[in-house]
Image 1 (cartoon, rainbow, N blue to C red):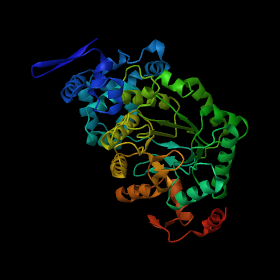
Image 2 (image 1 turned 90 degrees about the vertical axis):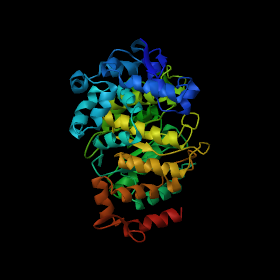
Image 3 (image 1 turned 90 degrees about the horizontal axis):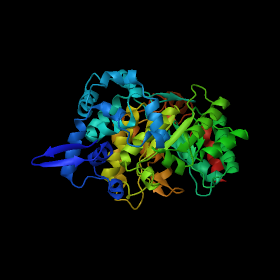
Length: 464
């Protein structure tokens, strides 16, 4: 089925829904690389206008990736909640945008609607929204998850403390971890990307994190960001695993490139649940995504990268995660060329995921060969804070020396909390006060010097 729209005396034709969605996407380098982008700004506007006139029900009848060939499509179609969709079933994409921006679309209404939306619907409406629209609607979405603390409450933004080290040196990891805790970072998760990725090393690292969390009674959770099969093996060997991590994408073929299937993810979730390590909840999965992953694996089926990304959120939603984040600028300028494209993509990802009912954060990041800098990241960080982002990263000095890219520092997270009046997870905030890391009655006035509880830890790190 084709689509068309007339601009002046010129009529633009779009061969199918996939083509229309791609042409309506705000400009980004990955879609040009894939050969699916609009050929001009005028064609993009024509596609956006045609998309705005499209009934939402079209997305239930025209699959962008064939049902028979893709388990993600089957997941989307087979789990669609028609009753939840009913309140907006009569709307076009443009009308849906207007409704989302209205006062009728409050937190309760958006939460009830989430199971009735497909990722393609969320992607479609995002393509005709301004940045301020993406921020306003996402801010109204409230998604709360729990393991050892409560993530996603109003007025709060959590952080992932990321103490990576290029050789997995225990003292180096401990130094970064201590630095982050003293900046009030780490309530979302203390998560390490291992330099040596095998099961014995995973067990060693996760055991080290477990010992630290237990010693200081920190109300948070740990994760070693290894492949899901390594985590399953570590659980089978008795490792104290809190969260299961996996990178995911929006097509079956792209997930195959990551070495995962839906059934494997379900096996991993069941393994983690069997440990019963949560104290206030049982959300045990942590997923990372990012625009361009399907294209980089040649597994995008001609679908634009932002829509592929939104489809990954259907995968995440299936497993009730504690945390999801888009590593928005990590792949490089081939997919998001500059700061403008990275900022837009980060806000789109956050909006679509929140609309679909996910606890969405963002790794506000860029590679050193992209046309972006830390000023661009400050803009995205601040906008995500205003939009109700669930969490951001905390990396020593904002420079990940193991993964070799630029992210957000402990100080950056402190900045956005202070400027926007955001606070950590409540259980973690109470612990910060009890440990003397923050001053009583002023959550973001850091204590002078090193709190007594950590003085011995500082000496141990200093002397190796």
